[in-house]
Length: 340
Image (cartoon, rainbow, N blue to C red; front, side, top):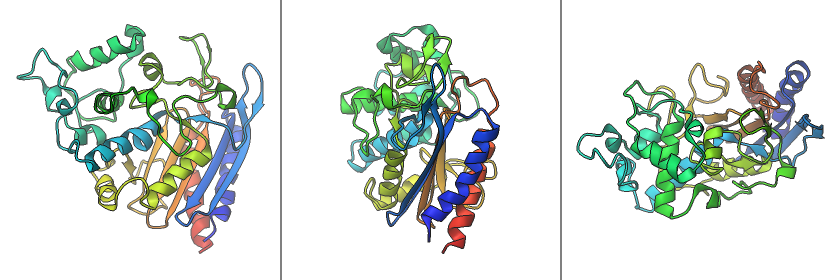
């Protein structure tokens, strides 16, 4: 098995994308369960207002990779410790959730499992930052809002609520948690890949969370705010595969499908997912809006991550990131298998 050969083959698709799309820069890496690692880098960490080349030490805004890497792991560790159960209502940690309607509020019946699996009636996203920038008030707004009933969708609000639960249970803000593996909520801006030239904040975001709601909630939330290098992301992935992060029974429970597309905190392989269809049926993965992604093929003992800053300097361009992610996954597995 050659992780290096797989990365080399998959990086050909990345290099082509950097030459033909607006994506400024990218780093692709993979790690085997045995610890073999390979990384390839190209392009820029920043282009506006000045050009900065990407390196292996470039720190990326991981965006929604915060959900599986940090929040899901932290919740499942609390389950392992017996402090909560997956089917407990969120009110176990947040007793003031919809506190003015304790008898009938549907929000008070939402469980940790439902939020992890995106199996709730909560909306995909809500522009919380447009209601103000006081983190405590915005948290109170999320907790007391009467959310419209709808079919389940992938929802940032699910993980904002899980983040508030973590803050209550651990008695500290999300940003004050240590995610480990070299991952951080407080990066050095000088080491970071730039994201958007934000019209709301009036500057190019570099070392500050791109997600507006996470920014308004204090810089980190359960759904976004985590930063890391390629080695930090792959270090987490390998530790997850080897059972260093969660106990075997918890890993098994985490990977059980909760719907056609979701496990607990992670996406599972399905026809439309971004990991490519060559990977094993039990594979899991997740993407981030800024242009990041992590996938783990358990059967092959292989994890790979593609980190880009495809929103720099604007999100309002077509970068073809979804097609690129799928091509990377397909080429990664094809080359890995041929090297066995």
